[in-house]
Image 1 (cartoon, rainbow, N blue to C red):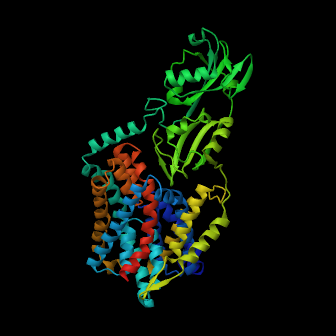
Image 2: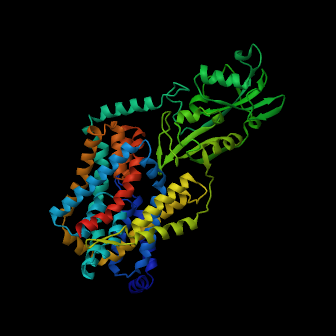
Image 3: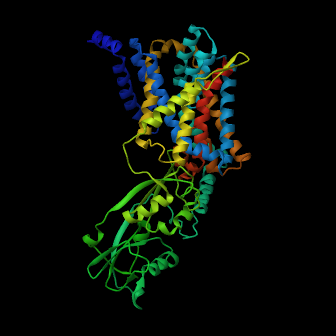
Length: 570
């Protein structure tokens, strides 16, 4: 049985790859308290184990999946990357660039002191900074620097070994430094939490309502029916506009009249001049915090299935510059066509950001809204492009984008005998950035749904990592013996020092708010685990305000540093 299995894996290596992917993803989901190896590291280690069977895998396979991964990364962050370069987030852009440069320099200097070669340095950087893509970018670049075939093979083979040794602290250490040590360095956890709460209250102060809960999104919409017989109507009927004015300006709440039943006839989405009299029945909508209150001024609540049976639509809208892409949330909510529309959440570069009154919206943000179909039909196009759920992916954009990007990246210029190139992987990343930006400006250019991006991102990277692990399997143990466990210490230095410098720099030089400072550090290092640790520590989503712009910049530069490291260490 064992010999047959070994023969089968060697004859059909694709079977071994899918075994590695399946078991690796399963192990990556396991947690002990808050600790988890993560998917990428798990897939790599399972691949190393499977690779002990000495399985040969064709070279182009891993490259194809890696290019898919890089394009998807660029496509996801492209809108924020280009928007940040010329928008109000330029201060965060500069911070991210400086921190990324510091990260590169600290790693290279550490490697020089330890006497590491180019492959060991690339693996150290990839693991300590938890930027798995550097494994592929550096491996793609090393053959072009003119080393002997034996050296090239050894350098490429040692990269995943060094990555595996340094990645664990790269992940856990980053989360601990930013989530626990960071607040202590900025004045103490209690003080930083108080400052974060103050900023949230300030950001949530709306011109439409002084109630801090007014714009606190992510609450389900509630619809309730009432029979009109309250004292508010003692002096005669009131128009819908008069009632809405009373609710918003006198009661300081935001609920809407969605339906009226008069003499047995139901009127959907009533106009502002529609008169409501005693004896009529109405349906009010709004977030739970506002609708479940004493509405005796209207009348008695009724449980009427017919009156409350109607469809509510939930859609995603890609905000555009001509729509809501340059407004604050408060300005958006004040638009007359937003009547009855509830903001469920806002996603920016794949990260959910807090929905606060003074939150500045940007083109490319994806906003989820809820409301009656008629209301959503009006509001959606005014905000931007209505991105209705679809399973269709623009393979034309995907294929030609990677083709042209990789083709340009393959061009090599020799300057003073030094070959300079973006590499095919760097070209695919930049192509993704451009295509993602074009999609935010011209949403009809080509669509790659979030579900497809998730597949391209996760399967693309992990398929590549699985092949790397299987290929490196036979020499993995000897590789660890070669680099020694001092590499783990080098990884601690390369992970910790840039983050500590970043926290100090954000406070003293850039004068960021503490919560924003920690979010910027997490984004520049593209460490989502650290963002979660920061938000848990502060009990707030405010740090995400510093994460999205810096993540777009950091994700691009840190991946491209794979090319720079090879050139510096060659």
